[in-house]
Length: 455
Image (cartoon, rainbow, N blue to C red; front, side, top):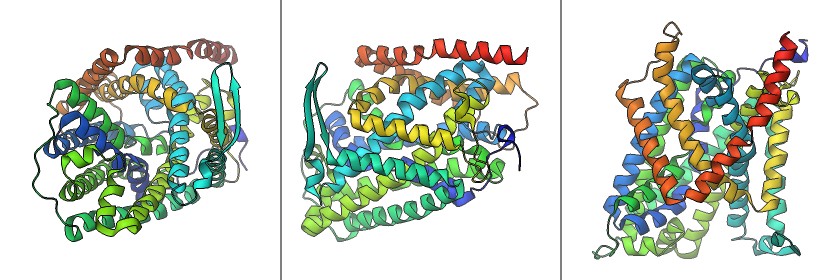
């Protein structure tokens, strides 16, 4: 058996597992909720479709750009490795720092909490408060559902600890069930539902600010298409399977989202969508009454479960990659000699995410880091062009279709989104930068230790 320090992650994920990570991680609860927010911003079904198409094409441009990097640098950690190669280790570290403590941790906590809130539809006792106390920071309340969310996170973390193939098989199965349920919702809305009568559009005027706000909501629904690249070192034949999963999975999600919205707006008017926070539930209630709403709740739970498993599977590889290079806690680089998984990284990420569920403050933290996340996305797409010049001899089994227009488009729109967010919410944007900057002392500490070990 190899020494711990030389253990490598196992390439056990096939093409279906890779594709299910893309589809299963992207489609969470967003598609059941965001059309409501988008109509409030743009005022009509036509504009909601336009924004979803634009957001989908933008995500596809990102997937096309990432596919070149993933095939050329099939390492764990995705953006960590790409930023390290293009800009140096500092940017790779800052990305891993933000993802570990806020980005992925907050996302996992949010998904688990969403799961228990939907489950509370059938078991209202989950929302019951079992502990309440007034602290200096305000009133603190713990609910039974939060304990369930914590158990769910830790259980899935243990499952992924015992082998990436096991986690991948679960991802394939749950994603298949999720897609089947969503297709049922689509068919119900497009075939069996009673179309709404012609109604006037809402009185909401279309503005540039409204368009960008709706686009951010759509991109939240599309977010996660890049996650499969985080497990690049565990995918078989990554030069073929990674580009296929990134591009094919993103196209599949775009098609599903457009069909779901076609079903929504066939049954509900734009004004009704704007007045229904749970759009899918309201549509299915019109068609099948209470059982229809229950079907949506079950579909949402399975959808969230798949996204949660995919996030735990992929997110734990980011701190592992940084630790392997000496820029994170050394223990996070441990690879289990039997299961060939980054066991410590998986369990630390799971425990931290579970604590964020209990704290109740994860939502705000996640909002803070979104500003910095789009800076990273733009920098990663730009890395395609930088590495073409910096490392022209790097083997590139896949080259970005539409280069250089596609990555340039993605970078420009990312820049505009960052500017919009900075002007729209300067306080939270600044806090997002502060969270990233807090990692700098740790980076220089680990860099110094790394240099000393090499002397």
